[in-house]
Image (cartoon, rainbow, N blue to C red; front, side, top):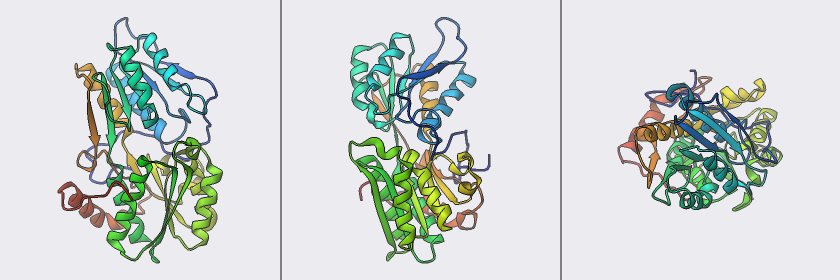
Length: 344
């Protein structure tokens, strides 16, 4: 695989962001060929955007597919309504159909999974990006700020003017972790760097993750003002950031998955200097594998730089020349010499 985590011991497939598929307006899903009765049955409920977002959801699905191929699991995935209002209903559908464990993709599932876990105490649940809140729930968390720090180091090193930008989909605590790490990484290289920051929607309005038009407008303004590289943590809206970069002849940094591999348009692939990898695929697969081995919930697993849970992709070779610098920054974080802030 061309894009891998810096210094990673292994890589498994995930999908990138900036997609061309909108969220379903009604629940939809697919099931693998039936496993033998009583076998491993894994259910997964996507975040808004569903499968095909070329980012967060697709990365989760890659882990689910790996569970199907390597653990012989019977799998089923469901996508929520466009406004995400039926998340709880999806969890109950999977539970009533006998799926165990069940995974909710995205912090917005936190409260719904808490309720479902109380209703179905014999089923194990996991939630991505939200802490465990019940004895039968496992929180799958990531040190997004650490991976974003490396993205900031790369951006500041590559941007001759020291002017870069960050586009966040929704102004909430999770996406602010990306901003905080990125800004810290940039300033570790150039203390006087100029960093433009724009959030597409306020906290609670998740439409910012599926508004490529807004992403494009935000990035266009940054490029017009002189930014050389823009990093996004904006879900489907990242497609607009890439489009703006292509039009301006500038560069962008993707998120969640190796977007240079997954964005279909060749003219957009070439503007993606690197992507901050968030190994949701690994988290999903490892949770299912642990469940199969008898593990129970009630705890959180954090995927950080130490376990290569986050990192940078290298597809295209555009950061190969600064690998030593990035590896040194990673080592300092892992060794505790650098503490990356999680709040701006």
